[in-house]
Length: 363
Image (cartoon, rainbow, N blue to C red; front, side, top):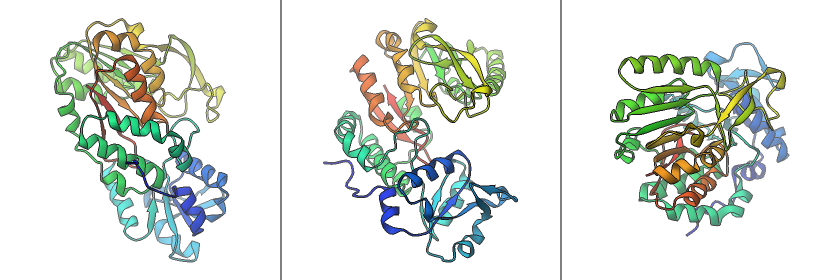
């Protein structure tokens, strides 16, 4: 049984319908979506750009005056327009606004890669369908298989009803990870320390934690969070570094995102970069590693490669983000199984648009 029977991806659908498009949101997401529309020869369909009321102000974006939603129909000249959402959020008030607009207009949230240049379109799906079928067959429960199927259909169509069909409760992951006891927890992409605090609170038997974060402002907040946890008796080390397949040095953006790698990234201004250490999980030389969280902004595959010895020796539970690159939905599982083939594999998506906050769990 094929994962998807969608005959047209979102971009093909928009090209066939040729209806006016209103972009909801500005910034990197809108830039990426405009680029895809240009590549498909349909950027001329963009007739308006709007923002939430608190973000309108008196400004322009890509030659369009940013207007409130209430003015879109008048600007476009018709009520028959399609809305493309150009940002990501899990905030309830933002999602409610998106759903309200979706009740009034035809609305999509396009899937464009957070990192890399591979677009998840129908051609990509057809080329890699066998790999995706193989990954789905490895998943350990019906909820994971349902999540995988709906997630792929969302990525092709931009239709957020597919995401709604595969949402899991935020606490569900703790049921999957319930066997974690003792040992060392490695948090790759620890950000402000939110997950560090969360997992140490849920699994107090963990004996030690290593938190890695490359972005300097986030790292300062992470360190402050860790200091409070250390006062509670936890053994924590914080490392300001990138994570990769081998130790070394690399340039990182000082002005874009959470420690965006500069090498091979045309969006990064190289004059606004700094050199930073690159570490691997294996180079940490931690003993009794029981849990690793990978959320490293598109470098998950490299981070897994740099953790091969640790995975082989300790078989830790792992949570690995699979939404940064289009190919993550199959390459991550294949890589882990090439190291150890005795994992049970699950997939969960928590409420968010676009299809972020989607992870594989290796137990």
